[in-house]
Image 1: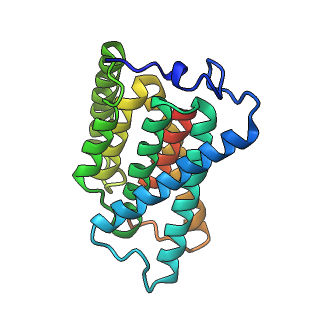
Image 2: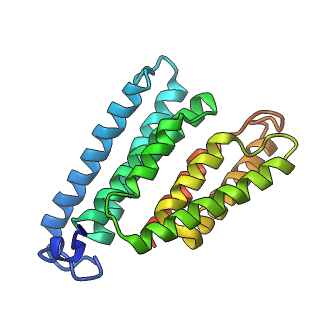
Length: 223
């Protein structure tokens, strides 16, 4: 069964999901999306058996910034697609990628269940054409990253980066998936070089790429 996203959002948005007049109602719905994101993210982080409020000020700042960024992306997704299935998928994706990013920042890993959850999110609205494009996108991105990783001597691309990027390809498709990967890699490398130049990050230390890959994926989801 395929849901009609345009029909669900017709009362507040036009057919393209673009804002169409009712400022107050739209703001309320966007805020509810953001609240759902915050709640889901906190619960998921708790499920990882990590301390949500840490004694480390730096970790607390990172978590606060992730929740803030997720809330912003949630509102943008709601305004872009309107209330409906595409917004639901986007909000779920934001929550999963936020947890993966937080995990990568703390441990430089991302659990396999997060990858599985992204793949399942791609099945929220079943469509055989989208499904085929998603499978092709995920497979080719996975093959590309495995090839790159095999030639990487210093392990600059880790297993978490590969799994998360490939899983996002299931939702975004090949073209947007590759653009998301490129955006994430470029911003991540630029940030790493900037931090290294300022002496805040050693070149021989692992660098968390998942947060940047997440931003790239969410940016492409909005396109």
